[in-house]
Amino acid sequence: MQVLMVASECAPFVKTGGLADVVGALPAALAPHGVTSQVLLPAYPGLFPLLPKGKEVAQFGDLPGGAARIVQVEAEGVPLLLLDAPQLFDRPGGPYIDENGKDWDDNHIRFAALSMAAARIAMGAIDGYQPDVLHAHDWQAALAPVYLRMAGRDTPRTVITIHNIAFQGRYGPQVLGQLHLKTDWFHPEGLEFHGDLNMLKGALMYADQITTVSPTYAREILTPEFGMGLDGVLRSRAGALSGLLNGIDTDVWNPSGDPSLAQTYDAKSLKGKAVNRAEISRQMWLDPDHPGPLFCVISRLTSQKGLDALLEAVPHLVSSGAQLAVLGTGQSELEQGFSQAASDYPGRVGAIIGYDEPLSHLLQAGSDAILIPSRFEPCGLTQLYGLRYGTLPVVARTGGLADTVIDANLAALAAKAATGFVFDDISGIGIANVIDRVIAAYSDQKQWQSMQRAAMRHPVGWDVSAKGYRDLYADLV
Ligand code: ADP
Image (cartoon, rainbow, N blue to C red; front, top):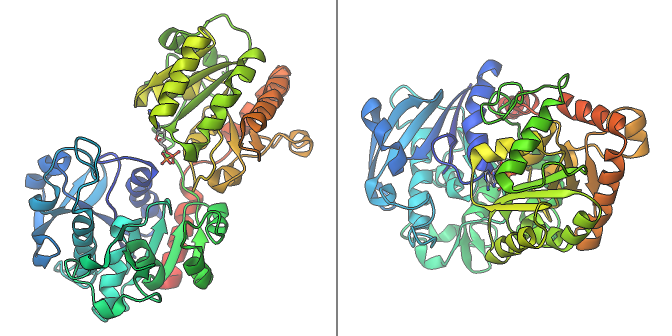
């Protein structure tokens, strides 16, 4: 089985979020299940060094935005097809934004070009290569199944995966011509969404299967509360929609071999966590002798993540005897709020405003619990890292958080199955209440350690979901 993946990000080459991790990990996870994949990705400047090492396998004269070629290369174990179109992708800044943080004006053209290249490859543009399935990820690749259908083809079969439905690729109808989209497909049963082109909606209408990254999020996006306007479209295609949980790279996230830790440990040597906590205290100006639990946050600082509510609960967290370490960047009022909390509660609250991969590993290792009070969370990765590191996740009951953490209720504790704390009320009071539960549980160290071991046993790798994708592809073909 041959699968062509199409995405705008792929770890470790280009990453702004969980999408990159998934696209980077899936090819290797699928290989043992008889699925061979290639990832079509734009050749951003960071990938230029790979181009001379690869082989040109296709040329296109007429994509949206002009001519382009495809270079095939394998790097870091990922088989890549790079879309080399310097007029679209040879730019400073991020994959979607310029150096000032503003979206590129021609993002619709850039990612339509990616999608059309994918459709052409799916139709046989590369000599000797015919994928069985075209698997598009998020709005940036969403026109790929649309172009395939517009060309009159219903093979290969197509899948669209929604990593976050908040991002849809919505543009005014004047771009249709630029993107080589047929105007007679522009209607509410096709590409139109309230007078605009909505690229993600296009894929939801025309792809054979729709997946998202957790079973609970798959149900949630069928409702107006979570569907971001596309819930009606999704309800009309509910039979084609399913949720497959993301996994994590258990080699990179492995407390017994992680080079970013002050001391490695495993489920049998949990005391090693204390050495990591001491190192966090040193780096984040926390009181190293404080007896209560250490909570951490590793996150984009946005209202999606419920961190405005956490800020309201900080005084309660401190007065109840806990410590808090925050690592993140995002909305300026939240950055300022957590910095202010660190200066209001010296030794008890630490905040580092920035993106720091090694520190994120150390925080997972040395903290007792990780707080994730998200208002919505398609899957979430940091709770999975927390489970793997015996750092108990404290999560809102939504999306993938609800699917991966077993709340410490009496039945789960009796069965030694509890792996964290799940709560419903995302407000200052709701978070204060769950913090009280965590602190009470922490005071019984025997039970706490039993929860840590249950968390560390919980499977968080790709095994189950890779089989899920394999089965989905097999059913389609
Ligand atoms: P989202 O994709 O919505 O941001 P996820 O939980 O799916 O949320 O993935 C976030 C990823 O980014 C995780 O790997 C997390 O460890 C990482 N991350 C977030 N903020 C930071 C930060 N400030 N420093 C280091 N890593 C971070």
